[in-house]
Image (cartoon, rainbow, N blue to C red; front, top):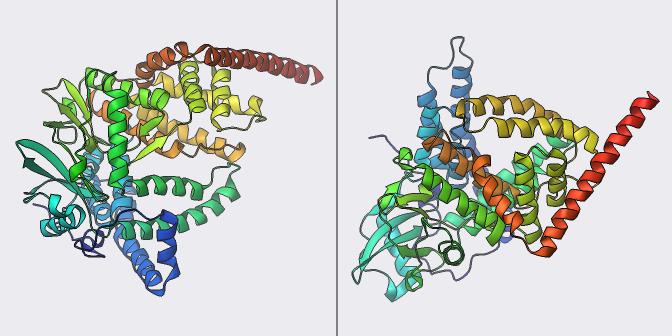
Length: 490
């Protein structure tokens, strides 16, 4: 068996037996506490050295291997080094690895397979610490015996317990996690500030790397509040499970839950991380329907759907979604705009796609359409046309990099505050689907759902959509007239 190094974030900081917290402090307050004390600054400096010490050797090995004349020879070994380094560095870095693991349309099979181990094969922390934490959180309600760890993830580990003849999954948070995460956020925001200088020097984009890190960090910080996660899970269960056949979300046992302990009913099934091929076409459609309903109808989206959070349950009849700690909210006006954007994108109606993106805040209303559309249309066409062919998608993504770099250098654009988490959720879901079924086309799958949403809107919404389409036609006409005038003047 492989040797796993003990990581500072899993065993560090306060004792698990410390008094139970009733409320998670704000992230800004936790970061300021780190920066504001001499002890905190020393810990921050030590953490920076630790991050550099673990990642720089991996980057050097990867760089040397990639620059070999006959091509890289140690891909698997280097990926394993990277995976162990990310695991040792803690939740912020493990989350980045999980996101990368889902992109099998970009990564090679052996790289993706190695990084998938970050989804639910993280090294556990000692069970006696977990028992002490559960006792501190639940008091007399704590189970007498937690048994053994059945799964360990970036933020906590899961035990299976039986009470009154019913089986439950008890998720226990890692000790010292809030302080460890706050240190990483301070470091990543410092890196983002340096990146912002480079972005503003070379590009015209309005996207601020510091804002991106802030939005991501706040979403990750919310995952530390298991009470909030339980409420999100129950809300999703009530909103989705009745209307989407084949979807399963386990109910929460509130008597055995607290800020750092969450208990739900135990679900038997096949883990997608252990057997990606257990996912079939009907499971993919359940996932598409669920996430389309989250975006377009519920307005609250599961933002962390890596393979470790999905189970094929009841002998393949149902898809179980777990871990609703990381969710994002989509405003009602944006839900309609996303539906229009998807419909027009598949129909190759690029003027209308740009209108929807303006409504979403990607572009200002007075953006130079005549300059933006040629660049963006090329990107949109390639995204849709590569369809379900995973090899074509890899080539298309590589070809798009140059166009995207051109785009961010020439044009100003922005991002909704929830977009980073939403985009991560969608690309992760697509990556899981592609790993199981190479005939899956996310645009083809989500188009009917978006079309039904547009068609089923109220009269006022339909009128607004009609007005937007008329306005789009008028803009196209004015654009053509302007082009003719320019051509005549030339």
